[in-house]
Length: 368
Ligand SMILES: NC(=O)c1ccc[n+]([C@@H]2O[C@H](COP(=O)([O-])OP(=O)(O)OC[C@H]3O[C@@H](n4cnc5c(N)ncnc54)[C@H](O)[C@@H]3O)[C@@H](O)[C@H]2O)c1
Image 1 (cartoon, rainbow, N blue to C red):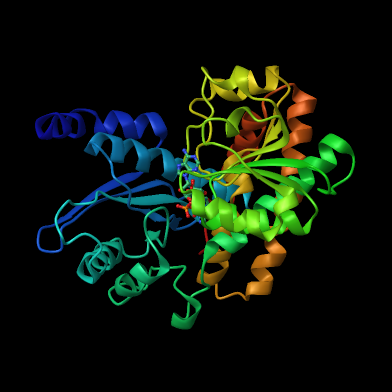
Image 2: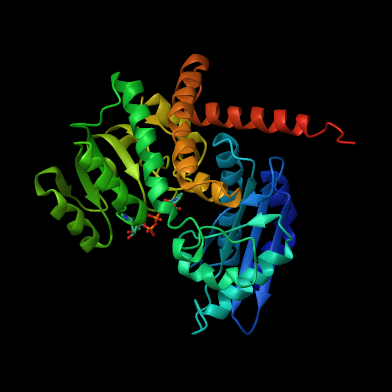
């Protein structure tokens, strides 16, 4: 397996970068701390790259590389659509099986390597890493974001991410039903983790009816205890096929694929998980089935907006104000898709390309 990994990286890395339009891919390895990591910078037209650091089990280096390339591209789109002047980047750590996993030294090494990119890349938490891990990284780097509030950072991004998804759901309700009220709407949430649990609480306060599923049943039971009459628990297999107004993916990506689309019974898909569609073809298939798809990288931009405002030293209120933008932008995407008879993904991607082109053009102005 080791040999295949090396062969893949040596043979195909430039082809992969060219295909996705990536600017830079950097591999880091530090024996004593056990760190093996990859940083991908997709596009820095708008500013320094910004993106979380993910630490999940990858079966091969290729899988980790594919993930970081795809996620960093998503970050470019996310920044462009959220109107923040940062580019797309991402970091993945390939967990070691040795006891060095998640040591303070591992994250100090992360900090050193991030510093070596000299401000081209800012990072913070993502799946498998916590704000506390980055306290160690921040000892070695000033390019770390999303630290705990008691450590001078803007804190947990899952709260603002959930708030952003809620804004998107209100916009979707407005578009589909002519009212942004979520009262009585049936919402199926896949994944009751940091974002899913926060969102469930917000939705219950809005009067929504919830159907929820998680591989970790106790997480669901906590939500059900909050409002037993409004929360039903289902299995992780059934959740995607549940008849509902909104299907809300808040677990992992790739959950919508060509072989399961025909089973969906929702009016719209709108959630926090990154890269929900397995391929671009899925966007067209969803449109054919009249299932409205809210592009994930717009809907889950609340956390990104929070850390972007943190870097720019703006207040939390400023970040919350800016996150309202998700509502307006999503309506714009829906209307553009309808007008041009294209998928919502294509409509969103076109807006991204237009913004990148306009800013790139402005930056050609000679400053003297
Ligand atoms: N936290 C943020 O600020 C943020 C921002 C943007 C995007 N996202 C994305 O949103 C998603 C959720 O993020 P999070 O921070 O809540 O992560 P998390 O790890 O806290 O929660 C994920 C939850 O999904 C559950 N899960 C995993 N596989 C499942 C399955 N097959 N069926 C049902 N449940 C399953 C896990 O048990 C866990 O409870 C991720 O895709 C993440 O990349 C998060």
